[in-house]
Amino acid sequence: MVSGLAGLTAILVCAAYAQTSGVTFHNTVTGETLNFDDALPEGRDTDGVKKFMQTGANPYNEDPSCLKKGEQIFLSACSGCHGHLGEGKIGPGLNDDYWTYPENETDVGLFSTIFGGAKASMGPQYQNLKLDEMLLVMAWVRHLYKDDVKHATWLTEAQKTAYKPYKHDETFPDNSPGLCAGK
Ligand code: HEC
Image 1 (cartoon, rainbow, N blue to C red):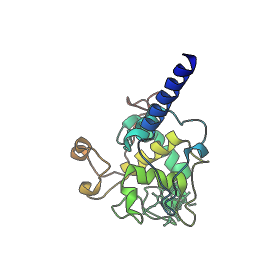
Image 2 (image 1 turned 60 degrees about the vertical axis):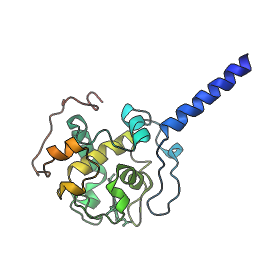
Image 3 (image 1 turned 180 degrees about the vertical axis):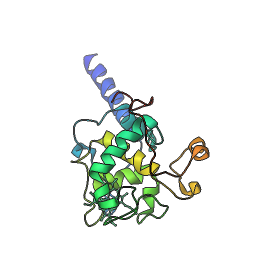
């Protein structure tokens, strides 16, 4: 009976695991499967990360409570190479509809590039940023987008309808309601 229960528990745990890792992630350059055991211990199991691992869609996109935090991470971890507005510097522009690696148009692709890096000075960020912070910074990168909304495939239909190209002086209040409130 006890071993039967243990077996059942093991099956349930496996099923839960399969569900949380419904999407597979690959290194942008080598194609190797990414190993999230390498991720920083904190920020791995937030509701946002869990949702993203199941759906492959970043739940923080266009959520005002997440954008301010994403902007701060972008300014400390990315803008030195990619420019303050993601316009490109020693790294390519991130605010237009051209991608060196077309999979970066998807949230899974963008996450994989941030986690596992690409070529040259685009090093893997898994020791610099928590998984949750990667989703936050991705939401900001998406928010900086300035080109035709028809190529913004990461947006939902409702978000596409509401889309306005990023304006330089846009700000968000610290206490906006949403998924990242109080984080
Ligand atoms: C030290 C400089 C440096 C930093 C810091 C850096 N990048 Fe990069 N990034 C680059 C370079 C150089 C490339 C081009 C690599 C290549 O083509 O393989 C790149 C490429 C990329 C790409 C692929 C773009 C495309 O057109 O497909 C993305 C996405 C990206 N970086 C996002 C980020 C984000 C988000 C951050 C902050 C968390 C960041 N990078 C931090 C230098 C940097």
